[in-house]
Structure formats: structure tokens, C-alpha cells
Image 1 (cartoon, rainbow, N blue to C red):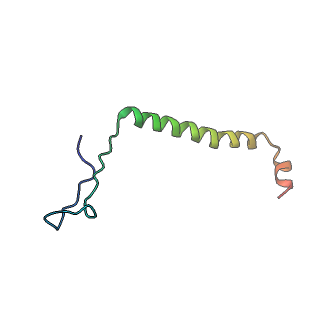
Image 2 (cartoon, rainbow, N blue to C red):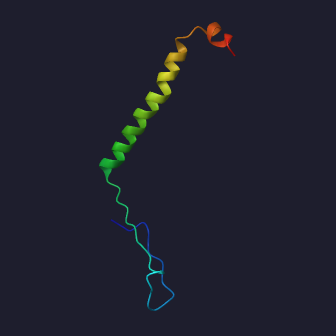
Image 3 (cartoon, rainbow, N blue to C red):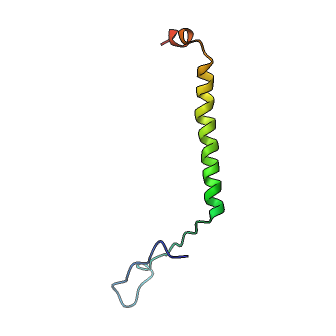
Length: 67
């Protein structure tokens, strides 16, 4: 797997602890990618379709009466 974040070059020949860089190598596995998409779809259905279905069951005259 390739490195997505490359360390920056140091200007000093002997780096001190204050100037050392930390490298991060993220790993994106297909399992976690699919899990994230499935979780996102479930959240969208719960927070999108549920209120829409609940509102669709209301009488329009009664729903607008209080606005």
C-alpha cells in the first residue's frame, strides 16, 4: 500500500525533537469502506424516510393550521 502522507524534508542536518515529523499511513480496507457505506445508508433511511412518512400521514389542513 502506498503512503498517502509523505514526511517533509528537514532543513537541519541533525533534527532536534522539536522539528521531527510524524508520519501517518492510513489503511483503507474494503471491509471498512463497505461498512461505512451501509451505516450511512441506514442513517439516511432512519433520519430521512421516517419523518417523511410520518408527515405524509398527516392531514394537510391540520398540519398547516398551526403555522
